[in-house]
Image (cartoon, rainbow, N blue to C red; front, side, top):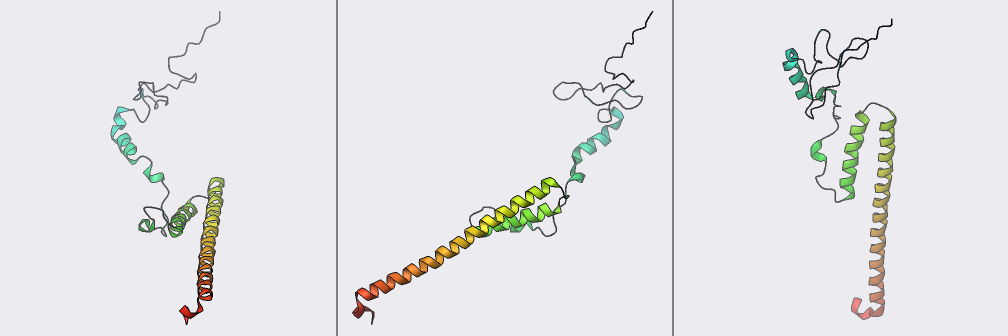
Length: 153
């Protein structure tokens, strides 16, 4: 007669068990228990201090460091001018270059280059408009002088 293998509730078939704790939504914890325990590392009562300390760090040790070239005081609070935009892009560039090289970083750098190009083109356009406005003012002045030459002697 064949015996039927009966698994203990919460096991995966190789003897490992799920943690007996529940999360804040009252759902069972999905982590595996520690060897010889009924709870995972996070919920094991004897690990409470270490678990609390790890939770407080919240991955802070894994965060990327800021570039030494970045001075947060140079980042404008409000973006109102092309110079403000360029300062913000310079900050973003320095931060991006600090990240590990990869596809996402390189795509972001290409997007940043495109933003620089647009801003520089816009700035050059504004410079040209300023020169043209100056020329128009000069021409208006010449027209006024031509209308009444006695007034401008």
